[in-house]
Length: 146
Image (cartoon, rainbow, N blue to C red; front, side, top):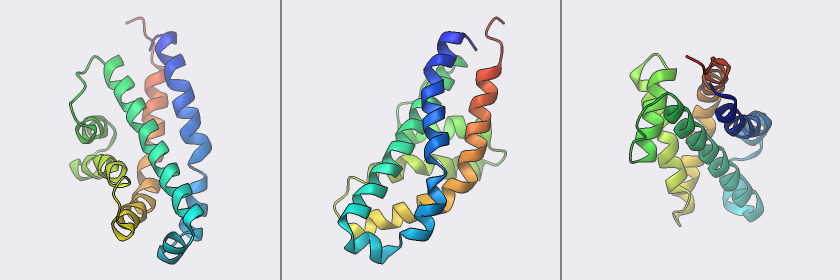
């Protein structure tokens, strides 16, 4: 990978690595009741999840571009395409692509629906992100001269 490309990716990867440790805290701290009754916590976790997924999408698009792939039209397709390179099973790539649906749903007005997607993110993120970050870092280490 060229140094210029690596330099663009580093802040996004650093962001994920700094924010993902909070996942365990949110899993313990936020349940439906907290989400429903504590407006500040609801906004905090919604914004946190949305920011993580946006960074994931940014990284995914950059890596696909660097690899010479075309960028699909939808966020779900972007995540599925990069997920297909990262995860061994198609179901795992499909689960990774769910992140786009989660992000899009956070704009919805119904608390119970948004909560279901936040809860789903908290369930799937611990299995998805370590391999995503590993894959991205491995791509960043590749020599861009050839």
